Length: 352
Ligand SMILES: *Cc1c(COP(=O)(O)O)cnc(C)c1O
Image (cartoon, rainbow, N blue to C red; front, top):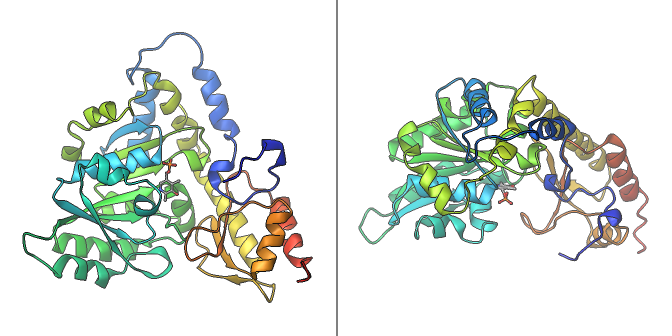
């Protein structure tokens, strides 16, 4: 991607990680930034953040704070597998397309087996077929089903869909990993209790995204099966994912988990995406490609329109999915930003 000075980036819809840190987190970090505290997680804020996560999920889960999603996914997947196992994931899953082979690397070679599925959700029959098509010793033994919630295409798995997947996973003795880089958006969209999308749906480990939800840095790895968390701390340390000044990673969770702040931000991001989709879909040459259930809108538009928008300085990705434009909203997206992009689309006259 070409380098752009921050001042040149106007109303972008590239990603939710282009957004700044929300004020609640910034204030919490300022508040912890005083005096000495024990390092490596032995501080009061880390304990408090873990307790809040346990309250949030209404269960006794084990929590680890790491720097980013690639590490959270790779290390948690590695903890579920032996190197001769395999992980079933959607063909567009971040673990496959955007982690530079880190899941395979950290698991010493556990293979990803990809399955198709409409709108970014794994197809149940394809999962079953992938497990049953071979049972001999030459095939890497399927061990984990990895699901992304919200998906890479901006859709969500409903609790009912998760229960069906859980049945399939149980039948084939698969553990369930959930990539929740945008878990907050899924929760806000489905309006159910966090437990319904996680341990009550058979999820063994969740990577809970903080960065895209309004933090500066950080994701939480949440183990619902406590046995799987044994020795996970060593994995984090060995992979360079144990923060020594841990309070700055963990304290950011505290304001987000209190008073529904994270959900409020996620609801806003989702609402902006819904508004954007609704307004863009009125244009005869713009087609919304997937149901807008979280904070992303995927649109197909004429190539010349796309180029014209980019030439005017609009930022969005076109490499996810099958070449359409992905317009991602965040907690910081304003209604005016949506309006300006819609105006730019409406004023395109097809000549340039
Ligand atoms: C952003 C994202 C991640 C995390 O990516 P990092 O850049 O490693 O923090 C993981 N999964 C999905 C689906 C994502 O969108």
